[in-house]
Image (cartoon, helix red, strand yellow):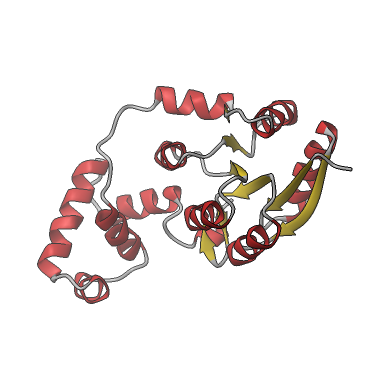
Length: 210
Protein backbone atom coordinates (compact mmCIF):
# COMPACT_ATOMS: atom_id res chain seq x y z
CA UNK A 1 0.00 0.00 0.00
CA UNK A 2 1.43 3.44 -0.93
CA UNK A 3 2.74 5.51 1.95
CA UNK A 4 1.84 8.86 0.38
CA UNK A 5 -0.91 10.22 -1.89
CA UNK A 6 -0.15 13.03 -4.34
CA UNK A 7 -1.89 15.39 -6.76
CA UNK A 8 -0.06 16.94 -9.71
CA UNK A 9 -1.45 20.26 -10.96
CA UNK A 10 -0.14 21.75 -14.20
CA UNK A 11 -1.89 22.77 -17.41
CA UNK A 12 0.78 21.08 -19.56
CA UNK A 13 0.40 17.30 -19.87
CA UNK A 14 4.10 16.81 -20.61
CA UNK A 15 5.00 18.53 -17.34
CA UNK A 16 2.55 16.38 -15.37
CA UNK A 17 4.04 13.26 -16.94
CA UNK A 18 7.59 14.34 -16.10
CA UNK A 19 6.69 15.11 -12.49
CA UNK A 20 4.89 11.77 -12.20
CA UNK A 21 8.04 10.00 -13.38
CA UNK A 22 10.09 11.76 -10.73
CA UNK A 23 7.60 10.81 -8.01
CA UNK A 24 7.73 7.24 -9.29
CA UNK A 25 11.47 7.12 -8.69
CA UNK A 26 10.95 8.06 -5.05
CA UNK A 27 8.57 5.16 -4.52
CA UNK A 28 5.69 4.69 -2.10
CA UNK A 29 3.65 7.47 -3.72
CA UNK A 30 0.23 7.06 -5.34
CA UNK A 31 -0.82 9.83 -7.73
CA UNK A 32 -4.52 10.03 -6.90
CA UNK A 33 -5.37 12.81 -9.37
CA UNK A 34 -4.04 15.29 -11.91
CA UNK A 35 -5.41 18.78 -12.56
CA UNK A 36 -5.07 21.08 -15.56
CA UNK A 37 -6.57 24.26 -14.08
CA UNK A 38 -6.85 26.07 -10.79
CA UNK A 39 -10.51 25.37 -10.04
CA UNK A 40 -10.03 21.67 -10.68
CA UNK A 41 -6.99 21.66 -8.41
CA UNK A 42 -8.92 23.15 -5.51
CA UNK A 43 -11.77 20.65 -5.95
CA UNK A 44 -9.40 17.69 -6.06
CA UNK A 45 -7.47 18.81 -2.99
CA UNK A 46 -10.77 19.22 -1.13
CA UNK A 47 -11.83 15.73 -2.25
CA UNK A 48 -8.61 13.82 -1.59
CA UNK A 49 -6.69 15.79 1.09
CA UNK A 50 -3.41 14.49 -0.39
CA UNK A 51 -0.11 14.26 1.43
CA UNK A 52 1.56 16.17 -1.41
CA UNK A 53 0.47 18.73 -3.99
CA UNK A 54 2.81 19.62 -6.85
CA UNK A 55 1.46 22.99 -7.98
CA UNK A 56 2.17 25.04 -11.07
CA UNK A 57 2.35 28.76 -10.29
CA UNK A 58 0.20 29.67 -13.30
CA UNK A 59 -2.84 27.79 -14.57
CA UNK A 60 -6.16 28.78 -16.17
CA UNK A 61 -9.22 29.82 -14.11
CA UNK A 62 -7.45 30.67 -10.85
CA UNK A 63 -4.14 32.32 -10.01
CA UNK A 64 -1.54 30.07 -8.44
CA UNK A 65 -1.43 31.96 -5.16
CA UNK A 66 -5.23 31.70 -4.89
CA UNK A 67 -5.07 27.96 -5.48
CA UNK A 68 -2.37 27.71 -2.84
CA UNK A 69 -4.49 29.59 -0.30
CA UNK A 70 -7.55 27.44 -0.94
CA UNK A 71 -5.51 24.24 -0.80
CA UNK A 72 -4.13 25.28 2.57
CA UNK A 73 -7.64 26.10 3.79
CA UNK A 74 -9.22 22.79 2.77
CA UNK A 75 -6.26 20.53 3.51
CA UNK A 76 -3.86 22.19 5.96
CA UNK A 77 -1.72 19.07 6.36
CA UNK A 78 -0.96 18.77 2.63
CA UNK A 79 2.66 19.47 1.79
CA UNK A 80 2.75 21.89 -1.16
CA UNK A 81 5.60 22.24 -3.64
CA UNK A 82 5.44 24.94 -6.31
CA UNK A 83 7.10 24.14 -9.64
CA UNK A 84 7.15 27.25 -11.81
CA UNK A 85 8.35 28.53 -15.15
CA UNK A 86 8.48 32.08 -13.82
CA UNK A 87 11.97 33.34 -13.02
CA UNK A 88 10.91 36.68 -11.54
CA UNK A 89 12.63 37.12 -8.20
CA UNK A 90 9.65 39.11 -6.93
CA UNK A 91 7.29 36.22 -7.62
CA UNK A 92 9.70 33.68 -6.17
CA UNK A 93 10.08 35.80 -3.03
CA UNK A 94 6.29 36.03 -2.76
CA UNK A 95 6.02 32.22 -2.83
CA UNK A 96 8.68 31.96 -0.14
CA UNK A 97 6.82 34.48 1.99
CA UNK A 98 3.58 32.52 1.48
CA UNK A 99 5.21 29.55 3.21
CA UNK A 100 5.41 26.90 0.50
CA UNK A 101 7.14 23.69 1.54
CA UNK A 102 9.18 23.48 -1.65
CA UNK A 103 9.99 25.78 -4.57
CA UNK A 104 11.52 24.78 -7.91
CA UNK A 105 11.94 26.24 -11.35
CA UNK A 106 10.84 23.95 -14.16
CA UNK A 107 14.43 24.03 -15.41
CA UNK A 108 15.66 22.25 -12.25
CA UNK A 109 17.44 18.93 -12.74
CA UNK A 110 15.25 15.84 -12.17
CA UNK A 111 17.74 14.54 -9.61
CA UNK A 112 17.37 17.71 -7.53
CA UNK A 113 13.59 17.50 -7.76
CA UNK A 114 13.64 13.88 -6.64
CA UNK A 115 15.78 14.79 -3.65
CA UNK A 116 13.67 17.83 -2.80
CA UNK A 117 10.30 16.10 -3.18
CA UNK A 118 11.42 13.30 -0.87
CA UNK A 119 12.70 15.79 1.69
CA UNK A 120 9.41 17.70 1.71
CA UNK A 121 7.40 14.49 2.05
CA UNK A 122 9.56 13.63 5.06
CA UNK A 123 8.50 16.89 6.71
CA UNK A 124 11.28 19.20 5.61
CA UNK A 125 11.55 22.25 3.37
CA UNK A 126 13.43 22.50 0.10
CA UNK A 127 14.35 25.39 -2.20
CA UNK A 128 16.10 24.54 -5.45
CA UNK A 129 19.58 25.91 -6.01
CA UNK A 130 18.41 28.01 -8.97
CA UNK A 131 15.78 29.72 -6.84
CA UNK A 132 18.19 30.27 -3.96
CA UNK A 133 20.79 31.80 -6.29
CA UNK A 134 18.27 34.16 -7.90
CA UNK A 135 16.99 35.38 -4.57
CA UNK A 136 20.50 35.82 -3.19
CA UNK A 137 21.67 37.88 -6.17
CA UNK A 138 18.63 40.13 -6.52
CA UNK A 139 19.11 43.69 -5.24
CA UNK A 140 16.55 44.65 -2.62
CA UNK A 141 13.55 46.52 -4.04
CA UNK A 142 10.70 48.21 -2.25
CA UNK A 143 7.72 45.87 -2.25
CA UNK A 144 4.53 46.74 -4.09
CA UNK A 145 1.33 47.12 -2.11
CA UNK A 146 -1.72 44.99 -2.93
CA UNK A 147 -3.42 48.07 -4.39
CA UNK A 148 -0.40 48.84 -6.56
CA UNK A 149 -0.46 45.29 -7.90
CA UNK A 150 -4.15 45.67 -8.76
CA UNK A 151 -3.50 48.96 -10.55
CA UNK A 152 -0.53 47.48 -12.39
CA UNK A 153 -2.55 44.53 -13.64
CA UNK A 154 -5.27 46.85 -14.95
CA UNK A 155 -2.75 49.19 -16.60
CA UNK A 156 -1.12 46.20 -18.27
CA UNK A 157 -4.56 45.07 -19.46
CA UNK A 158 -4.86 48.37 -21.34
CA UNK A 159 -7.32 50.25 -19.12
CA UNK A 160 -7.20 54.02 -18.73
CA UNK A 161 -7.17 55.78 -15.36
CA UNK A 162 -10.92 56.48 -15.36
CA UNK A 163 -11.81 52.82 -15.98
CA UNK A 164 -9.29 51.62 -13.42
CA UNK A 165 -10.80 54.01 -10.91
CA UNK A 166 -14.29 52.67 -11.57
CA UNK A 167 -13.14 49.07 -11.17
CA UNK A 168 -11.30 49.75 -7.92
CA UNK A 169 -13.71 52.41 -6.57
CA UNK A 170 -11.02 55.08 -6.40
CA UNK A 171 -10.59 58.40 -8.20
CA UNK A 172 -8.59 58.78 -11.44
CA UNK A 173 -6.27 61.11 -9.52
CA UNK A 174 -5.55 58.34 -7.00
CA UNK A 175 -4.90 55.95 -9.88
CA UNK A 176 -2.37 58.40 -11.29
CA UNK A 177 -0.62 58.55 -7.92
CA UNK A 178 -0.39 54.75 -7.87
CA UNK A 179 0.95 54.81 -11.44
CA UNK A 180 3.69 57.27 -10.46
CA UNK A 181 4.55 55.21 -7.39
CA UNK A 182 4.79 52.04 -9.51
CA UNK A 183 7.16 53.66 -11.97
CA UNK A 184 9.35 54.96 -9.15
CA UNK A 185 9.50 51.63 -7.34
CA UNK A 186 10.14 49.59 -10.49
CA UNK A 187 12.62 52.01 -12.03
CA UNK A 188 10.69 52.45 -15.28
CA UNK A 189 9.39 55.60 -16.97
CA UNK A 190 6.78 54.34 -19.41
CA UNK A 191 3.68 52.18 -19.67
CA UNK A 192 5.67 49.74 -21.82
CA UNK A 193 8.08 49.32 -18.92
CA UNK A 194 5.17 48.57 -16.60
CA UNK A 195 3.77 46.12 -19.16
CA UNK A 196 7.08 44.28 -19.37
CA UNK A 197 7.15 43.98 -15.59
CA UNK A 198 3.52 42.81 -15.40
CA UNK A 199 4.09 40.08 -17.96
CA UNK A 200 7.25 38.91 -16.22
CA UNK A 201 5.43 38.82 -12.87
CA UNK A 202 2.47 36.87 -14.27
CA UNK A 203 -0.02 39.64 -13.59
CA UNK A 204 -1.55 39.49 -17.04
CA UNK A 205 -2.92 36.48 -18.98
CA UNK A 206 -1.38 34.18 -16.41
CA UNK A 207 -2.80 31.03 -18.05
CA UNK A 208 -0.65 31.72 -21.11
CA UNK A 209 2.56 31.83 -19.08
CA UNK A 210 4.85 28.88 -18.32
